[in-house]
Length: 265
Image (tube, rainbow, N blue to C red; front, side, top):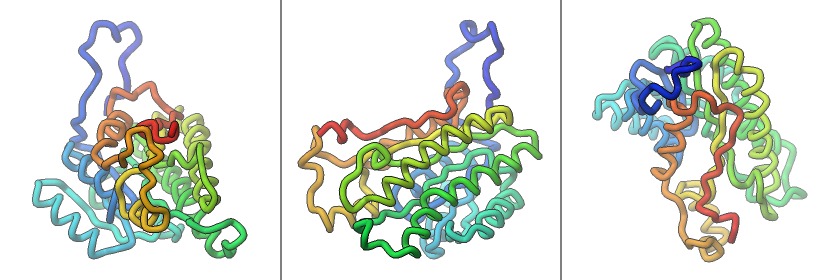
């Protein structure tokens, strides 16, 4: 990974852009469907060795077979992100088989779709563990190992436009996704001295398994959007690759909103 352009040379070099991730190991959570599946596929297509994680082993193995057929180095790791010890073990397994993780995409997430007064304590704890605590633990563990290996790294946390605009029935989702943005800012500050960039993406409404459930409950939500459409996962490719490429060398602590002006409707 490019460590940045030396002072005084920035105006004399070619544009600092490359999507070549050869030689790097990526670790992506929530890869059994939706955005996570696309993130893993794109990183593998750009040459990264990818540890794909999720709870549904059958889907993980199917994705691994698909990516391997295209020549990628892939390691499926069944993982429940609410199991803290399993998070640390998963990173160790990825490093043992693929090399030190330099790209972490914290994608796993869970919707609530419940009124705050109807949430039991166990559900609240699960929401926090899935949408926030797991991201923190993985970010810290990956960074510890990068420091030991004396390597730079990139962490991309997946937040949501729900962090900025939320409706009734999305309390814990909005709370946790807002916290992801703040966590991104604070970890970026702390990890900068270790040459680890930490950023976030806040997608709007995209086609996904999670979105399918929402549409079943709420009907067509696109009628309130300026362009009356949902995003498709491939429309996040450029944002993801920007945040893991040399082009974003000076970007850390940012949250990039990708929502097609949906929140303006």
